Length: 261
Image 1 (tube, rainbow, N blue to C red):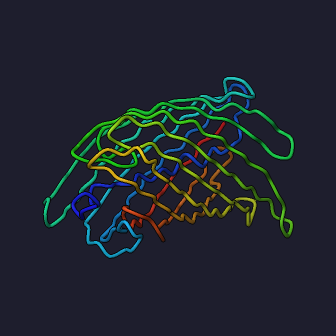
Image 2: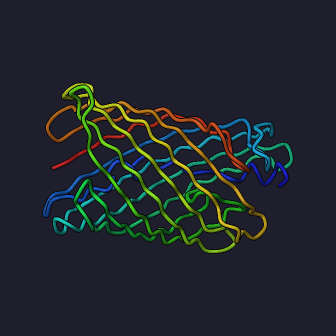
């Protein structure tokens, strides 16, 4: 893939997806995650996974995730988002976009023995640069089916949890379909302080149509969550891309406010 196309592979980073995890909300309860993420890149991974292609990329993503427990086993959610992205390459010049997206769906608890196993389905419609990849200012749509497993543990007297998610995304052409794989590990250091380590991974399918081609992206995020009150918490995060293929070498920071009842 030529460098001009690599610069347009803008991999969206979503903070709110992993926060809810495999657990559903009690009936009549709701929660909201408001997140702002800024990310940059000055290099891209080439088709061989080498981070040696120049690129200039800046992105601001603002999201709100609203969740409501319709029953104890079924949680509904909606995620409106707004994105501003700037890309500059020697051959293509400056590309600047401002767009929004809306994702909505439901998460159903299936099993609760030895942890929580759930299934989730959602539909997303988005402007350019608010799906995983974008080119030529194309908008797009996707349907996602996700399996989630979460379990709690205790280490040295401190409570923790593990959340594993695997999904399949069907995206309108010319974008390829995707397989995300996400992992979250959290540990409460004190009553009001939790640390989290997360891994977000996306593997594209083999159905890409030009200008898209196969890509994969891997991101590591490290967070501190401070419980401010009974209903409010603040998450502060940093993330970077240690590996990838036809993807940006992305790094950034994110802040999310959690509200729960």
